Image 1 (cartoon, rainbow, N blue to C red):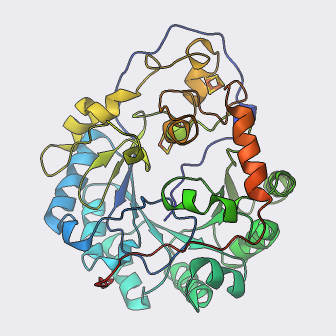
Image 2 (cartoon, helix red, strand yellow):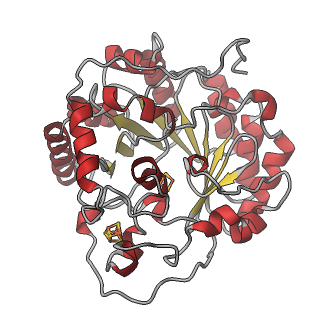
Image 3 (cartoon, rainbow, N blue to C red):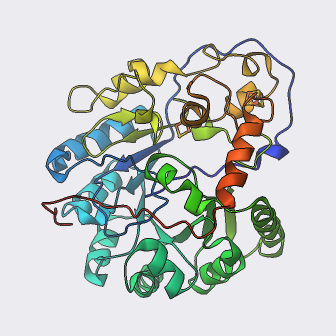
Length: 391
Ligand code: SF4
Ligand code: FES
């Protein structure tokens, strides 16, 4: 599973005069990622879920999810992204969607499209589902099936997309691009238009969780990334009345970092299958953070007081060069998890920033990885023996 929060191209963000450091404040979050399960039929090598997945036996029950949704709505959350793994692997997915509708939350189903029958999708639509986001691993069957590690995956995704449109639900196509499919960006755009999608998200792979294991097999070259970005920019202009194109830029070749999560603890929260509440998808890779659980506390208490959420809120925690930088309230120092992965310090400037002393090293890592053509994938596996069923 890969989740991205679309961001504007950071290069277009104007610099502003440096103001005083921002104190850690906690306005209401806008979005919540509900990771309903880590079970998944696909085996994508770019999966950004943790290396150690949560087992089915540890998952929150229906009643707890319904309470969490009510609490999130009361706190001010507007959108819930139902994700995983594959969220439809939960037998109670319709009850969870219904709870979103009852509490006025906009529900977005983030699905790989495998194992969802038309009847099941109709049940979700009847329960009040607002939107479907469908992932494609390739623009053709051979690429999708190889990257996803599952035969006939592409065919089944096409089928689901048709049902989504027939039911009148808005559809977003989500694509994670990397070395094996980056040349297919024009084809992904055609595919999304053919499927009647209102939006496509083209996200360059982010190297957290399982994906970090496959970085050398996934990393595209600088030239490939340049062509892909130019293709997206041209398509935005050409297709602006037909489809919305969101892009998540590749960090390793960037000049400035992405404003990860739009700032730590500022706009969104993630709830894991077992109920831990995280400021971002990969926060558990940061040692020493203390995560609170919805089994023990309310969503509002966690959002406001959890040590993990307050660790990197605002700008007080920043080191130089971020601390005195004019962009510190624009990109919030980039990504804490990437700073940890590359710099070994989650409070360091994200090495994706050209002002980081480690920026050149990050670029060199990418160039070296991109040169290892032919590296084999380490495919994601949900469970070791004994195998756990999907539903
Ligand atoms: Fe952003 Fe920090 Fe780089 Fe300034 S120094 S641009 S705040 S990451
Ligand atoms: Fe960017 Fe954790 S993934 S802050």
